[in-house]
Length: 233
Image (tube, rainbow, N blue to C red; front, side):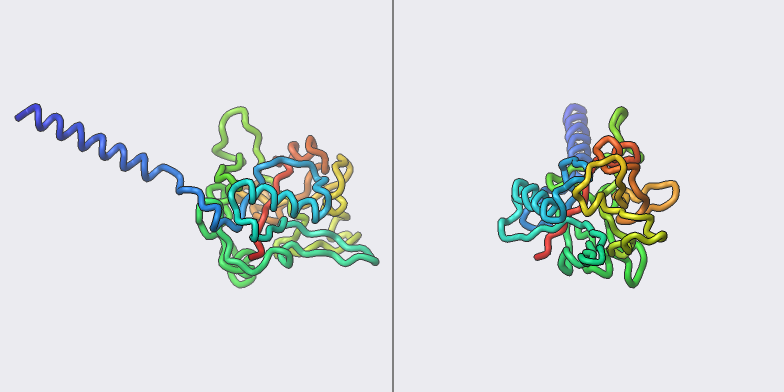
C-alpha cells in the first residue's frame, strides 16, 4: 500500500512537472498566419534601397514557410528631395491585422500600430517582436552574458511611421542612411526599440539616431542592422 502511494505521488509530481514545462514551452510556429517579424539577418544601413529591403523581407519570409502569394514590405521610410517625394513606412505595409511568427496579434490596424487613437495600443515587445523563425532578438536586459544588445530597429521614421522632412533642423538631416543605400560611418538612421527599453525614449519605431550606418557603427548604439517586416496582404 505504501509503495502504491509513493508511486502515485511520483506520478503526480511528474505530471505536474510536465504541465509546467508545457506551459513554459513557446507556442508553435504559424508561418501560414505570420504577417510580421523582425529580420533574423543582420545588415548595415545599405539595404539596397527600399526594393532591396523588401526583397530581404520576402526572401526570409518564404524561407520560413510563408505562402509565396504573401507580399512583404520593410517598415522603412525614405526622405524626399525637391525632385523625389518621401515615402512613409506606414503607407507601405497594408492595413493589418498583423500576427507574429507564433500567431500573436501585434496590432489590429494602422491606428493601433501607431497609437493614432490611443498610445501604446500595439503589442510589440521583446517577447512578441520575434524573427521569422520565432526567435527572440537580444534586448537591452535579460540577454545572455556576452551577447550584444540588438534592440535598435532601423525605421527612418517618426513615431507615427512617417518620413522626416528633408534637410530641416528639426529632422537633423538625413535619418535613413541615404535612403538605405549607405554603409558609411558618417551617415545616420532613426531607429526604434523592439523591447521598449531605453533611458530616454522607449518608442518601438522612433527612439534615437544611430552613430553611423556601417555595421560597426550600428552595434555601438545597440543594434545589428535589423528591421521590421510586415505583410501587406
